Length: 255
Ligand SMILES: Nc1ncnc2c1ncn2[C@@H]1O[C@H](COP(=O)(O)OP(=O)(O)O)[C@@H](O)[C@H]1O
Ligand SMILES: [Mg+2]
Image (tube, helix red, strand yellow):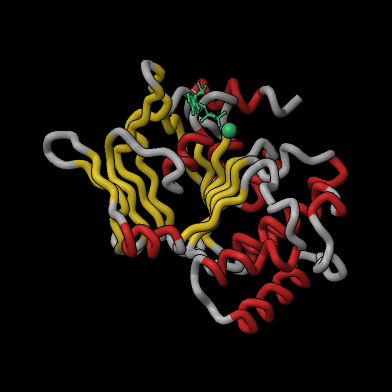
């Protein structure tokens, strides 16, 4: 697909003898929201970590738009781009983890401004303006000068989302963004992700929040055993799953 924001093709990954990703292919169109669901240990986080180059793939290709980040030659040797090309690729995506990973000694404002200034070498006043507007958008007005430990988990996660957005990525990856939160704080984080979806921000979201996935995603991907078992429109996957494994998984959430 020529205009995919992100694509992985025939990606495999093992840790020692443990094959965690088996021939995964996934392409995401501009503005598309893809929810990834599936049982623990199925390879969802590894998939995101491979997509964002935190882990190296063993086989396959990885691209961001026209930029091929990793490819496999005829001998099965994987090579990654380096230097400026890799830096350019890395500025095309943002990643929001389950645990918020903010710099603990920096204020919210500094957390958001740091990478755009240090990594992207952007103008400080322009970055600050954008950071303040992201803070407002994430409902964090008044938190600019607070450090992470002064914030609730939900506020910290929203600051992490602002930090990812400040790099102006083409796609955002979320790895279970609400699973470390107390239930009463989950809603406020899902709400800002919904808002991003409404703005046509391209996203891949690993989540256990089935109602949210059904509601916000354009496409749902069910992963189990390192494979994409089934994918489709939310109404299909949730309403009429074709695979027994998908049915069995979803049955656990319907009680
Ligand atoms: N860094 C690692 N080293 C060794 N094994 C790993 C590592 N990361 C994940 N795994 C293994 O990969 C499998 C898939 O894990 P993961 O991608 O975290 O699944 P999920 O996010 O779907 O729960 C598990 O068997 C896990 O133990
Ligand atoms: Mg995981």
